[in-house]
Length: 307
Image (cartoon, rainbow, N blue to C red; front, side, top):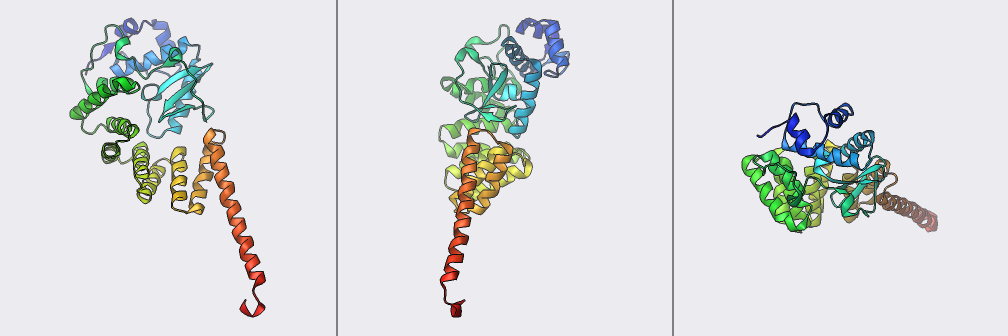
């Protein structure tokens, strides 16, 4: 695996030694003397966000908050698209835009000029950066390519190369599964999600994504078991609670859904989906009250001899 020296990083990304040292001190980048291609992508993201006047402390807190919100995501700067919104960072993940510190989903009004992509697209790749030669570089390049529909096929090819080199690369299986899921190719998506679960049985995101495929293809009971597996690994996985509640609603089991609607609201009290969750909670409780009233009314109408 090719490694870049500290001098290489400064030259390729055109940052100063003082800038790099300040980002290390802020805890945004691990102090090192050599770096992988993946590390270079992370430093580039930090550089671009700082250039847009996002404070290092905000970047650090945004990363921590995003890791808490998305189980299994180790490095949001590289694994998710992001852009600056004033002094804050908004991440794009799973078709949603989220500001993680506030825990809010937001409307994605970002312009192309404001977006900090997951990694540089092919036409704008960093000068002197070689074509990916190992699994780590291929995976990082694939993340960049999959964001643009016109280059998704190249991303698929790169992820498949990663799996040829490292068949147990769970994240590559996840990303391939997500591409196929978004294309409604559920058979291939399920294949890769199941492979990710087999490779890493403690990967909560893999169970969640597999549950989505199962739910989408009508296997709701199996989807419920899979969402529950995700929550066993990550009890604060808000999206898993939300989808599990929806699944129980489909099976006409509102009382079981209620528990997960409440859990979701506790984890996301102000996002756009929390309003729907609150409405569902009220609907279920109101229905329960109505049932009790009807039972009492029916009992009151019965003759004393039948009671």
